[in-house]
Image 1: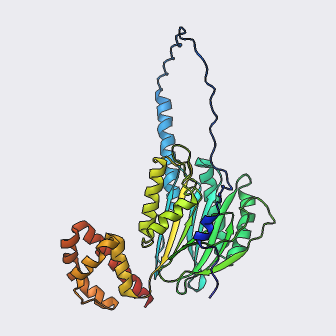
Image 2 (image 1 turned 30 degrees about the vertical axis):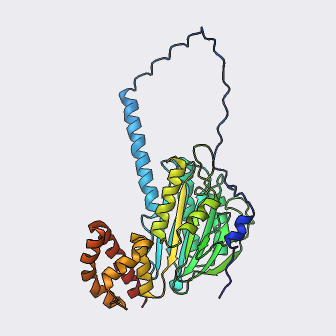
Length: 376
């Protein structure tokens, strides 16, 4: 088994570090100079804004329609949903700071049952960043389909970025996952390190220059194993560098504290919790795009996994009570027994939880059973 890379975070957090962005996205505002105006001097009247003529209004409507089309195209590029990987839960989410963003992620099926997963961050914001993002994704897909290792893939993508995006820079993390064994092989071009989440949180460290800087850049790669029940969080620096109204950043330490405080959360719930926290932190005004891809390997034992599904939907503190209500000691043991039990469980869950929560619970159990059937 390959050794895991990274340091366990209690050690990391003992030494204070800063994580500056390699892309330097944020522009600091200039401090204005206050001008003294004599009390007797009345301010000049503001000129009335000229009424927008019909041609200008029409052009404004056309620009808005074009931006909406661009947003739709970009969402299509990012994929509206993560792929279904038997034995895994996968969630991906991207929040642009403006109408259009420069973050990207992608999923690609590879040979031998492996799966390629990429996350990246393009320099700049708005329409220029969105255009660079589309080009970077196209270049990545072309190289990744050659089924070469992550380090060689990033070196080839670097050449493409230098050729196609001469005035841009891209950070990119690329990993190849073998779903049945949980092995990941990954390379990094200046991106934030992925986080392996279990009883502790570890950074999987492998360094490399961002794409688009040096034509001679070479990239190393590392391997790790994601064990059953463990998760992997890939994210862009917009998450930890999100600013509060007074300019305080969200920080890497705060991210880790949130993960440690809720270790049972599955990818969908963890992503929702992190989005809620960062929006609260920023009062809903993002200074940079925020993107996350979260993977979790399901537990090998079906009963334990379904119990964790129930905990995720209704909360850990209510699991024991509902578990006894649903099963009263007669717990199904395999996929077919569970599927046969679902019609009986639904009304019991509805009585205890209400219609909406019960529907969500049964749906999540059904998805879990479909996963176990696929890998059995």
